[in-house]
Length: 139
Length: 206
Image (cartoon, rainbow over all chains, first blue to last red):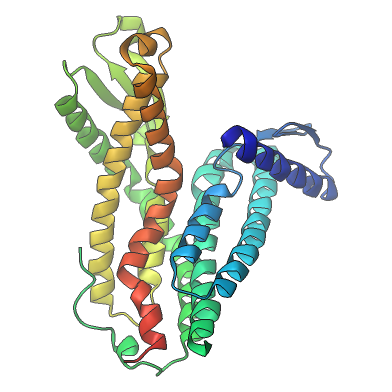
Protein backbone atom coordinates (compact mmCIF):
# COMPACT_ATOMS: atom_id res chain seq x y z
CA UNK A 1 0.00 0.00 0.00
CA UNK A 2 2.74 2.42 1.01
CA UNK A 3 4.95 1.62 -1.99
CA UNK A 4 2.16 1.44 -4.57
CA UNK A 5 -0.10 4.28 -3.47
CA UNK A 6 1.32 6.52 -0.75
CA UNK A 7 4.84 6.96 -2.13
CA UNK A 8 3.67 7.89 -5.67
CA UNK A 9 1.16 10.27 -4.14
CA UNK A 10 3.91 11.78 -1.98
CA UNK A 11 6.00 12.21 -5.15
CA UNK A 12 3.09 14.14 -6.67
CA UNK A 13 2.87 16.34 -3.56
CA UNK A 14 6.61 16.97 -3.80
CA UNK A 15 6.41 17.90 -7.50
CA UNK A 16 3.48 20.26 -6.89
CA UNK A 17 5.37 21.88 -4.00
CA UNK A 18 8.49 22.17 -6.14
CA UNK A 19 6.47 23.87 -8.89
CA UNK A 20 5.00 26.31 -6.36
CA UNK A 21 8.49 27.10 -5.06
CA UNK A 22 9.67 27.68 -8.64
CA UNK A 23 6.82 30.16 -9.06
CA UNK A 24 8.06 31.94 -5.94
CA UNK A 25 11.51 32.32 -7.49
CA UNK A 26 13.22 29.49 -5.62
CA UNK A 27 15.55 27.61 -7.90
CA UNK A 28 14.73 24.05 -6.83
CA UNK A 29 15.21 20.66 -8.43
CA UNK A 30 13.36 17.43 -7.68
CA UNK A 31 14.95 14.13 -6.73
CA UNK A 32 12.04 11.74 -6.10
CA UNK A 33 10.36 13.08 -2.98
CA UNK A 34 13.26 15.44 -2.22
CA UNK A 35 13.03 19.15 -3.06
CA UNK A 36 16.54 20.54 -3.23
CA UNK A 37 17.45 24.21 -3.41
CA UNK A 38 20.71 26.10 -3.03
CA UNK A 39 20.12 26.88 0.64
CA UNK A 40 18.00 23.98 1.85
CA UNK A 41 16.48 20.60 0.96
CA UNK A 42 13.42 18.79 2.28
CA UNK A 43 12.33 15.21 1.87
CA UNK A 44 8.54 14.86 1.81
CA UNK A 45 7.66 11.75 3.77
CA UNK A 46 4.65 10.19 5.48
CA UNK A 47 3.25 12.76 7.85
CA UNK A 48 4.13 15.62 5.48
CA UNK A 49 1.91 14.61 2.56
CA UNK A 50 -1.45 15.49 4.09
CA UNK A 51 -2.62 11.88 3.94
CA UNK A 52 -3.20 11.54 7.70
CA UNK A 53 -5.39 14.63 7.81
CA UNK A 54 -7.19 13.46 4.70
CA UNK A 55 -7.86 10.07 6.31
CA UNK A 56 -9.14 11.67 9.53
CA UNK A 57 -11.41 13.96 7.49
CA UNK A 58 -12.63 11.12 5.26
CA UNK A 59 -13.34 8.86 8.23
CA UNK A 60 -15.35 11.62 9.90
CA UNK A 61 -17.30 12.39 6.71
CA UNK A 62 -18.08 8.73 6.05
CA UNK A 63 -19.10 8.10 9.67
CA UNK A 64 -21.45 11.08 9.81
CA UNK A 65 -25.14 10.38 9.06
CA UNK A 66 -25.52 12.30 5.80
CA UNK A 67 -26.81 11.64 2.29
CA UNK A 68 -24.22 10.05 0.01
CA UNK A 69 -24.31 13.06 -2.28
CA UNK A 70 -23.25 15.29 0.62
CA UNK A 71 -20.56 12.82 1.64
CA UNK A 72 -19.10 12.66 -1.86
CA UNK A 73 -19.17 16.44 -2.11
CA UNK A 74 -17.40 16.68 1.25
CA UNK A 75 -14.77 14.11 0.30
CA UNK A 76 -14.00 15.80 -3.02
CA UNK A 77 -13.87 19.33 -1.65
CA UNK A 78 -12.02 18.23 1.48
CA UNK A 79 -9.35 16.36 -0.49
CA UNK A 80 -8.66 19.41 -2.66
CA UNK A 81 -8.67 21.94 0.20
CA UNK A 82 -6.56 19.81 2.55
CA UNK A 83 -3.99 19.25 -0.16
CA UNK A 84 -3.93 22.97 -0.90
CA UNK A 85 -3.24 23.72 2.75
CA UNK A 86 -0.61 20.99 2.78
CA UNK A 87 1.01 22.58 -0.27
CA UNK A 88 1.21 25.85 1.65
CA UNK A 89 2.75 23.93 4.56
CA UNK A 90 5.50 22.34 2.43
CA UNK A 91 6.31 25.63 0.72
CA UNK A 92 6.34 27.51 4.04
CA UNK A 93 8.53 24.84 5.64
CA UNK A 94 10.99 24.96 2.77
CA UNK A 95 11.22 28.75 3.04
CA UNK A 96 11.54 28.49 6.84
CA UNK A 97 14.38 26.00 6.46
CA UNK A 98 16.08 28.20 3.87
CA UNK A 99 15.79 31.55 5.65
CA UNK A 100 14.98 30.83 9.32
CA UNK A 101 16.55 27.41 9.91
CA UNK A 102 16.46 27.76 13.70
CA UNK A 103 12.66 27.72 13.52
CA UNK A 104 12.40 24.74 11.19
CA UNK A 105 12.06 21.95 13.77
CA UNK A 106 9.31 23.64 15.76
CA UNK A 107 7.50 24.70 12.58
CA UNK A 108 7.77 21.24 11.09
CA UNK A 109 6.47 19.27 14.03
CA UNK A 110 4.35 21.48 16.20
CA UNK A 111 3.07 24.42 14.19
CA UNK A 112 2.19 23.01 10.80
CA UNK A 113 1.00 19.56 11.89
CA UNK A 114 -1.36 21.27 14.33
CA UNK A 115 -2.55 23.77 11.73
CA UNK A 116 -3.19 21.19 9.02
CA UNK A 117 -5.11 18.85 11.34
CA UNK A 118 -7.03 21.77 12.82
CA UNK A 119 -7.93 22.84 9.30
CA UNK A 120 -9.24 19.34 8.58
CA UNK A 121 -11.29 19.29 11.78
CA UNK A 122 -12.81 22.72 11.24
CA UNK A 123 -13.51 21.92 7.61
CA UNK A 124 -15.43 18.85 8.79
CA UNK A 125 -17.42 20.92 11.30
CA UNK A 126 -18.37 23.37 8.55
CA UNK A 127 -19.24 20.54 6.17
CA UNK A 128 -21.36 18.75 8.79
CA UNK A 129 -23.17 21.93 9.73
CA UNK A 130 -23.51 23.67 6.38
CA UNK A 131 -23.84 20.72 3.97
CA UNK A 132 -24.60 17.40 5.62
CA UNK A 133 -27.24 18.43 8.14
CA UNK A 134 -28.94 20.89 5.77
CA UNK A 135 -29.25 18.24 3.08
CA UNK A 136 -30.48 15.73 5.65
CA UNK A 137 -33.11 18.21 6.85
CA UNK A 138 -34.11 19.08 3.27
CA UNK A 139 -34.34 15.40 2.34
CA UNK B 1 -15.96 9.93 30.66
CA UNK B 2 -19.08 11.95 30.37
CA UNK B 3 -20.02 15.20 28.78
CA UNK B 4 -22.30 16.44 31.48
CA UNK B 5 -25.98 15.98 32.00
CA UNK B 6 -27.36 19.39 31.26
CA UNK B 7 -27.70 20.82 27.84
CA UNK B 8 -25.93 24.11 27.27
CA UNK B 9 -28.35 27.02 27.40
CA UNK B 10 -27.90 28.03 23.79
CA UNK B 11 -28.19 24.46 22.50
CA UNK B 12 -31.24 23.77 24.59
CA UNK B 13 -32.95 26.76 23.09
CA UNK B 14 -32.83 25.06 19.70
CA UNK B 15 -32.94 27.57 16.94
CA UNK B 16 -32.18 30.64 19.05
CA UNK B 17 -29.11 31.23 16.90
CA UNK B 18 -28.49 29.95 13.38
CA UNK B 19 -26.46 26.75 13.41
CA UNK B 20 -24.14 28.07 10.72
CA UNK B 21 -23.23 30.88 13.11
CA UNK B 22 -22.28 28.32 15.76
CA UNK B 23 -19.89 26.55 13.41
CA UNK B 24 -18.31 29.79 12.29
CA UNK B 25 -17.91 30.95 15.90
CA UNK B 26 -16.29 27.62 16.70
CA UNK B 27 -13.87 28.14 13.81
CA UNK B 28 -13.04 31.71 14.90
CA UNK B 29 -12.65 30.71 18.56
CA UNK B 30 -10.39 27.78 17.72
CA UNK B 31 -8.06 30.03 15.76
CA UNK B 32 -8.08 32.64 18.55
CA UNK B 33 -7.38 30.04 21.25
CA UNK B 34 -4.52 28.47 19.30
CA UNK B 35 -1.85 30.99 20.34
CA UNK B 36 -2.61 31.20 24.10
CA UNK B 37 -2.98 27.42 24.33
CA UNK B 38 0.29 26.96 22.46
CA UNK B 39 2.03 29.39 24.85
CA UNK B 40 0.65 27.55 27.88
CA UNK B 41 1.66 24.19 26.42
CA UNK B 42 5.19 25.48 25.67
CA UNK B 43 5.52 26.68 29.28
CA UNK B 44 4.22 23.43 30.76
CA UNK B 45 6.06 21.11 28.36
CA UNK B 46 9.29 20.62 30.39
CA UNK B 47 7.34 19.64 33.53
CA UNK B 48 4.98 17.40 31.54
CA UNK B 49 8.00 15.80 29.85
CA UNK B 50 9.51 14.94 33.23
CA UNK B 51 6.21 13.44 34.39
CA UNK B 52 5.89 11.46 31.16
CA UNK B 53 9.47 10.15 31.34
CA UNK B 54 9.14 9.11 34.99
CA UNK B 55 5.77 7.40 34.38
CA UNK B 56 7.00 5.78 31.17
CA UNK B 57 10.10 4.44 32.88
CA UNK B 58 8.01 3.00 35.73
CA UNK B 59 5.62 1.37 33.26
CA UNK B 60 8.49 -0.08 31.24
CA UNK B 61 9.98 -1.55 34.41
CA UNK B 62 6.67 -3.31 35.01
CA UNK B 63 6.67 -5.00 31.60
CA UNK B 64 10.37 -5.77 31.07
CA UNK B 65 12.53 -8.31 32.83
CA UNK B 66 15.11 -7.50 33.99
CA UNK B 67 14.15 -3.82 34.29
CA UNK B 68 17.09 -2.12 32.59
CA UNK B 69 15.55 0.82 30.75
CA UNK B 70 16.20 4.39 31.84
CA UNK B 71 14.60 7.42 30.21
CA UNK B 72 17.05 10.25 30.81
CA UNK B 73 16.07 13.88 30.18
CA UNK B 74 18.45 16.15 28.26
CA UNK B 75 18.52 19.68 26.79
CA UNK B 76 16.29 21.43 29.28
CA UNK B 77 13.82 18.60 29.40
CA UNK B 78 12.62 18.77 25.77
CA UNK B 79 14.67 15.78 24.70
CA UNK B 80 15.59 12.47 26.27
CA UNK B 81 17.70 9.38 25.86
CA UNK B 82 16.50 5.82 25.91
CA UNK B 83 19.25 4.10 27.90
CA UNK B 84 19.83 0.43 28.72
CA UNK B 85 21.87 -0.40 31.80
CA UNK B 86 22.68 -3.89 30.48
CA UNK B 87 24.58 -2.53 27.44
CA UNK B 88 28.35 -1.84 27.47
CA UNK B 89 29.08 1.59 29.02
CA UNK B 90 29.95 3.22 25.68
CA UNK B 91 26.63 2.10 24.16
CA UNK B 92 24.26 2.68 27.06
CA UNK B 93 22.45 5.55 25.35
CA UNK B 94 20.64 3.70 22.58
CA UNK B 95 18.41 6.45 21.15
CA UNK B 96 17.84 10.18 21.58
CA UNK B 97 14.35 11.50 20.95
CA UNK B 98 12.32 14.68 21.35
CA UNK B 99 9.78 14.13 24.13
CA UNK B 100 7.93 17.34 23.30
CA UNK B 101 7.03 15.92 19.88
CA UNK B 102 5.03 13.16 21.55
CA UNK B 103 2.38 15.48 22.95
CA UNK B 104 1.98 18.57 20.75
CA UNK B 105 -1.55 17.35 20.01
CA UNK B 106 -2.43 18.85 23.42
CA UNK B 107 -2.38 22.25 21.65
CA UNK B 108 -5.05 21.07 19.23
CA UNK B 109 -7.03 19.50 22.07
CA UNK B 110 -6.99 22.68 24.16
CA UNK B 111 -7.93 24.95 21.27
CA UNK B 112 -10.82 22.71 20.20
CA UNK B 113 -12.26 22.19 23.68
CA UNK B 114 -12.02 25.84 24.72
CA UNK B 115 -13.48 27.06 21.42
CA UNK B 116 -16.94 25.50 21.67
CA UNK B 117 -19.50 28.31 21.73
CA UNK B 118 -22.63 28.19 23.86
CA UNK B 119 -21.25 25.87 26.54
CA UNK B 120 -20.75 27.18 30.10
CA UNK B 121 -17.10 27.66 31.04
CA UNK B 122 -17.28 25.30 33.98
CA UNK B 123 -18.46 22.50 31.75
CA UNK B 124 -15.96 23.34 29.03
CA UNK B 125 -13.10 23.10 31.51
CA UNK B 126 -14.43 19.90 33.05
CA UNK B 127 -14.69 18.26 29.63
CA UNK B 128 -11.22 19.51 28.74
CA UNK B 129 -9.91 17.98 31.98
CA UNK B 130 -11.32 14.56 31.13
CA UNK B 131 -10.01 14.79 27.57
CA UNK B 132 -6.56 15.89 28.77
CA UNK B 133 -6.47 12.93 31.15
CA UNK B 134 -7.31 10.53 28.32
CA UNK B 135 -4.65 12.21 26.19
CA UNK B 136 -2.05 11.85 28.94
CA UNK B 137 -2.78 8.12 29.10
CA UNK B 138 -2.37 7.97 25.32
CA UNK B 139 0.95 9.86 25.54
CA UNK B 140 2.21 7.39 28.11
CA UNK B 141 1.21 4.47 25.88
CA UNK B 142 2.87 6.15 22.88
CA UNK B 143 6.12 6.59 24.84
CA UNK B 144 6.20 2.94 25.91
CA UNK B 145 5.41 1.72 22.39
CA UNK B 146 8.09 4.06 20.99
CA UNK B 147 10.73 2.56 23.31
CA UNK B 148 9.63 -1.00 22.51
CA UNK B 149 9.73 -0.25 18.77
CA UNK B 150 13.28 1.11 19.16
CA UNK B 151 14.25 -2.15 20.85
CA UNK B 152 12.47 -4.30 18.24
CA UNK B 153 13.53 -2.46 15.09
CA UNK B 154 16.19 0.15 15.75
CA UNK B 155 19.18 -1.61 17.28
CA UNK B 156 20.43 -3.69 14.35
CA UNK B 157 21.78 -7.11 15.29
CA UNK B 158 20.58 -6.78 18.88
CA UNK B 159 17.00 -6.20 17.66
CA UNK B 160 17.16 -9.15 15.27
CA UNK B 161 18.47 -11.36 18.08
CA UNK B 162 15.78 -10.32 20.55
CA UNK B 163 12.69 -9.79 18.37
CA UNK B 164 11.25 -12.06 15.69
CA UNK B 165 9.80 -10.84 12.39
CA UNK B 166 6.27 -10.68 13.81
CA UNK B 167 7.35 -8.67 16.86
CA UNK B 168 9.39 -6.27 14.71
CA UNK B 169 6.46 -5.68 12.36
CA UNK B 170 3.93 -5.41 15.18
CA UNK B 171 5.95 -2.87 17.21
CA UNK B 172 6.86 -0.90 14.08
CA UNK B 173 3.24 -0.75 12.93
CA UNK B 174 1.96 0.12 16.40
CA UNK B 175 4.48 2.94 16.73
CA UNK B 176 3.62 4.31 13.28
CA UNK B 177 -0.14 4.19 13.91
CA UNK B 178 0.10 5.74 17.37
CA UNK B 179 2.62 8.41 16.42
CA UNK B 180 0.94 9.64 13.26
CA UNK B 181 -2.73 8.96 12.50
CA UNK B 182 -3.95 8.18 16.00
CA UNK B 183 -2.01 10.95 17.72
CA UNK B 184 -3.33 13.49 15.23
CA UNK B 185 -6.87 12.10 15.29
CA UNK B 186 -7.15 11.86 19.08
CA UNK B 187 -8.06 15.52 19.85
CA UNK B 188 -10.77 15.47 17.19
CA UNK B 189 -12.10 12.10 18.34
CA UNK B 190 -12.33 13.29 21.95
CA UNK B 191 -13.89 16.59 20.87
CA UNK B 192 -16.47 14.70 18.80
CA UNK B 193 -17.24 12.40 21.73
CA UNK B 194 -18.12 15.40 23.90
CA UNK B 195 -19.57 17.89 21.47
CA UNK B 196 -20.70 16.40 18.17
CA UNK B 197 -24.27 16.12 19.50
CA UNK B 198 -24.40 19.91 19.70
CA UNK B 199 -24.47 19.93 15.91
CA UNK B 200 -27.59 17.74 15.93
CA UNK B 201 -29.27 19.56 18.82
CA UNK B 202 -28.99 22.84 17.01
CA UNK B 203 -30.70 21.31 14.00
CA UNK B 204 -33.29 19.34 15.91
CA UNK B 205 -34.71 21.20 18.93
CA UNK B 206 -36.78 18.15 19.87
